[in-house]
Each structure stands twice: as structure tokens, then as C-alpha cells.
Image (cartoon, rainbow, N blue to C red; front, side):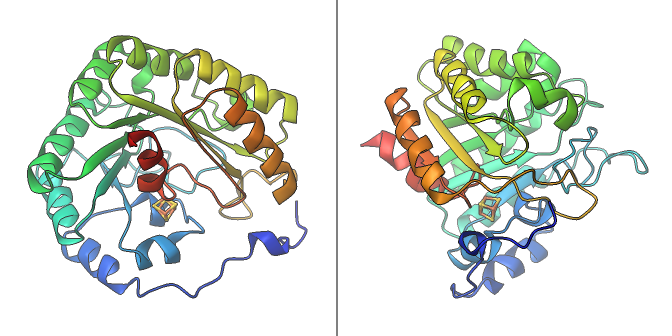
Length: 288
Ligand code: SF4
């Protein structure tokens, strides 16, 4: 869709100074999904001293059509950086994070998909900022239950895995993913680690119908998902899958009501919501 973005998707750049976060990331040689995915909220989040750390390098082994993170078609992912967990923890301490959000590229080339690396980073973060809550936003680890177990056993406060889109569009948008596998992961985590808060999210504007969004949400709720996020898909470049339409703020408001009625403990649904957008506040609503 080439139409200019509507007014409600205009990003206002009147936030606090993002430079301290940028300097911290540069000095500690860390990557964020905020930058990697060209997130529209970066100015706000960095300005508020927040970022979502992206582990295991800048090369993803999958080719999701919505994502700006470089894929491994031309480059091989690098070996794991054993010092990365310490640096993420150091950044969390330096930024005085109260809620540390950690994600990664997908690393299908690693035997455990990087689950142990997630666990090491959670442990390092817990030591560096003991009062902070920790949220992991994981890939599907290829459906490997052993990897799910390792990631869940690190006991993050929130175990997040995004389905991103409805089942019908998965083969088109996430060709190497599998909707059922993603839902299975969320259900497995809730069943085997019931004390963890589980979270998932999807983008709208990819060609799904409102009924499909609700059906997806029902399926996530049936899998025990506690928190849900829904935001407008915005293609990072002209080469990415085009947005099929812009969902209006009124439609988001109605969707939000429907999602609350499904029984999610917390719902974030608005045009510029992203999975980790104001994650601390979303989680805080279930801690009360
Ligand atoms: S919404 Fe998430 S990915 Fe986007 S800038 Fe904020 S923390 Fe980063």
C-alpha cells in the first residue's frame, strides 16, 4: 500500500534525549531489535531509557517478510558471543532498567536454537539488576521442547513468543514458521511453568480479517496466554511485504474491548503498539 500514512501513525519526536541509550549500546557493543527492526517507537523508548536487547548477532536464519533484520541468505550467522550476557546485564544496570526485555534473532543453525544463551543472559541480568523483572521474547526454537524447557527454567517473569499473524497468512508472511508450533510453545510453557506470565502478539494490516484476529486471540487464550499485544504492521522498507490496510484507532478500540472480554490479564492494542512497547507497564497491570 503506497498511500501516505494516516495521521494516527505519525511519530512525534518530542521525547527525551535518546543519546545515553545509544552511547550505552555502542560502548557495550550491543544490538537492539529497536534498531534492527526499525521500530517506529525508537525515539520514545530510547528517550525513556528503554530498549529491547537482541541476542546472538544481527543475522537471522529465517526470512519473515515483515522483518528488517538481515537474513542469512548472503552471510553466515556468527558464533555465539560468550560475553554478550554480561554486557546485556551491564547495560541493564547502567540504564537502571526495572524491566529488562531480551529477544534474539532466530538461530536455527544452533543445536538448541540459542536457548541456553537466553538462560545465561537472564541469569546475568538477574544478578546485575536483582529488583528488575525480566521478559524474554523468544523464537520458536524449531519446536524443540528441550529448548523451551531451558528458556522457561531460567524463570523470566514473562515468557513471550509472538505469533505475529493469523494462521492463514503464516506460510506467506513467516514461510519457515508454523502457527500451530508457535501456539504449542506458548501452551507448553504455561502447562510446564504455570507461574510464568505468558505473552504473545500479532500485527494487523497484513490482509487478515477481524474475525481471524479474534479467532487467533481465542486460540492464544485457550493456550493460557496471559498478555496480548496488537499493533499496526508497517513495512520497514519498500522491499518488505506491503501493508494491506491501516486499521483505524476506532477499530483498535473495539478490538481492545473484545480482547479484554476474552479474559486476557492485560491487553495492549493500538496502532503503534509493538510487542515490547511499554512492556514494563503491560506487565505491571498483572502484578497488582
Ligand atoms: S517498542 Fe520495543 S522494539 Fe520498539 S523501540 Fe520500544 S522497546 Fe524497542
